[in-house]
Length: 212
Ligand SMILES: [Zn+2]
Image 1: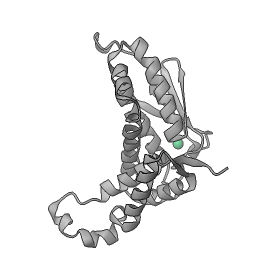
Image 2: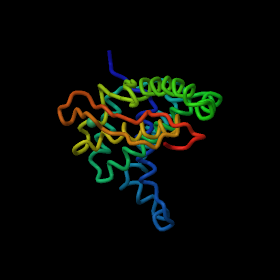
Image 3: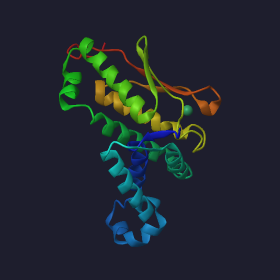
């Protein structure tokens, strides 16, 4: 069977490229036609792909993993690859978080952590699996996240590609439980350490008592 990813994954990469390449000042904006040829994110190809994947996301369809890998390679060749991968990861987290009902999102923020955490964990697991093709599990006061088939692995020098998953996990935990703890890349397939794996702080703090 052909390996697939949720269409939101390639869409996040595309949106990040477009954002980075969109002129931010008036001077650049006046030459947008000229820039269109030079900047990938403004090209007709990217525009068409964004349209296609937006439609796929709307329909809840998945797309071929090879297409997402090809896109990662294109990004990985750029000097600003890490910034793009990180922005794409954040985009991915925000959009997938929005698939959780507003009531549940509110509950996760307002309930005491003993009740909110199991709920947040279930959603982290679900989102990690559906949108990032990864496995979320809890070990002691940590949350572990591993991705057996990374689509960004080896697409940029060193572990740069891995920053996509790292920033996605960090943003997701920020949204789910308000965590600003460290997310560490503890194992990397790029360093021949098996599967890429990240470790995040999952300790709960009583919000009314502040951080202890
Ligand atoms: Zn890695």
